[in-house]
Amino acid sequence: MGLIFLVGYMGCGKSTLGRRLARRLGVPFVDTDSRVEEREGASVSDLFRYEGEQRFREIEREVLDASIAEYPSAVISTGGGLPVWGDNMARMNAAGCTVYLRRSAENIAGRLSPYGRRKRPRLQGLNDEELVAFMTRDMASREPFYSRAKLILACDSLPDDELVERIVAHVGR
Image (cartoon, rainbow, N blue to C red; front, side, top):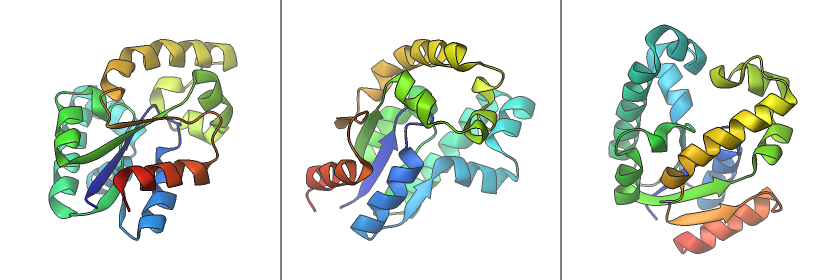
């Protein structure tokens, strides 16, 4: 089966869906944000704040490369910005199957808990209207990278079980 990389905007459900998909396929689940935090002993938010985005993206790439080397088969949930930096999207496409979980800004805003907002450095302090406007602009800038995925799923109107089954059918297992 190989590696399956879930890409998409923050809060689109990569980690939640990734765990379900990994269970369904009987393979390990890897969350790059969690691995970055474990490795560095700091939250993504703190790394962004104190080390800067450039250093965070370098660490994120090292975690991506280590995950590719370590797991012959796994579901890997990536940070929302990982596919946009350097050649990460090409790297993932070469190593396995990339799946873009496409959602609207309104859908993602509705999914984010207050904690989900607080833990994401770029969303702190935004009201609901500002949040949707920010995400709409930011998602548009990332779309050219995300859309290089081998499978693109429009997720707004589909339940997680259906999304899992569509990915399973695509990877042929």
